[in-house]
Length: 153
Image 1: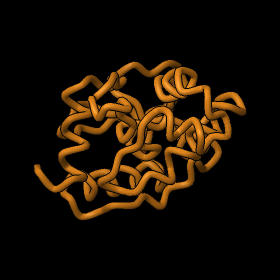
Image 2: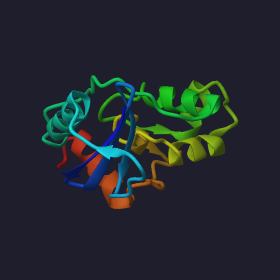
Image 3: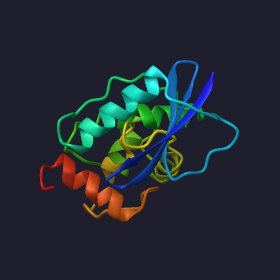
Image 4: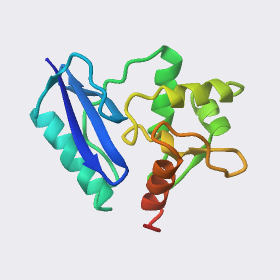
């Protein structure tokens, strides 16, 4: 079964997609495609865990994830999952963790194509010099998420 659900959040509308019992997408906006709108137990759990996260009550998610991507993208996304709540890593550090130390530009591309934002925390990747870099949800959303996790919100 393929289901879609939209939820409101402090950083805008989030679109959740579920397929075969796992979350396949958490992106910004209302686009949808030909998915059935629904409220499965998994999507309701995702909504609850995100609410707790935005309230500062949750640091880890327990949802089954099934991001679709290339082998390299999946290695990068797995590396992102190792970044602790409230911390950041550079693109170069993620490239090393993904097993491709010189591929930091490709890490940027994999981040850009991350289909499960927030849960696979691409917002925690910053420039080597500590600068904030692009984010699919916009720079204000990235700043919000980082400040939330660092306790300054």
